[in-house]
Length: 99
Image (cartoon, rainbow, N blue to C red; front, top):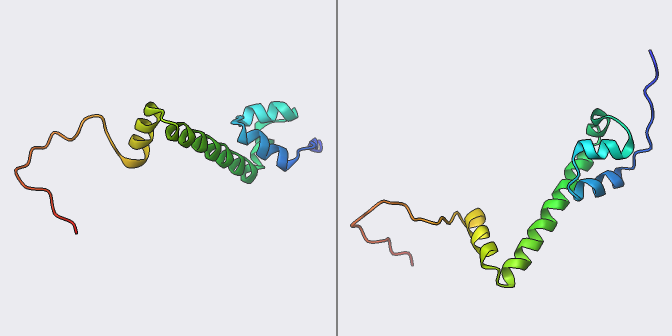
């Protein structure tokens, strides 16, 4: 049986590529190896993808803070559970008083 080929894969580069939103296939193509080889670096892929999400969330917040109403509505729906139309339940009961 042949010895597995060794690749010069830098974990920090894996984090960087994953933080740019690169897929496992794209990262494997970058290194000239298989996706299975890249999957062995799962902890680095996870860290990079988390960085990507944090950066995107920061950009969304900045956009909303600058007055982008569309982004404000989107974040309200995603993070606050807001909806375009309220529930169609009609109740004669007053809302509870919370002190």
